[in-house]
Image 1 (cartoon, rainbow, N blue to C red):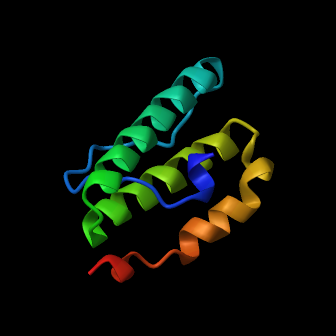
Image 2: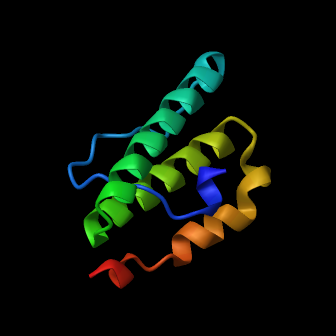
Length: 91
C-alpha cells in the first residue's frame, strides 16, 4: 500500500540493504517495510525533497529485496512509479 503513494521521508538515512538471503527473506522484507513506514511518517510531518528522497529510496530498496525473494514481478508498476517520482516538487 505504501509503495503506490508518496509517503514519509527521513533526511538522515540509515543504511538499508537489499541483499536478502533465502532463509531470512520474509524477516528482511519486514525490516525494510518498517524502514519505509518510518520514513513515510517523517515525510508526512515534514515534506521536503530530502524526506521525499528517503521514502523513494526505502521503497525502491524494499522492491529490490522483494525481487531478490522472488516477489518482484508483483511490483513492476510501483517500481516505475518510484523511479519516475520527482521529489523536487517539495522545494
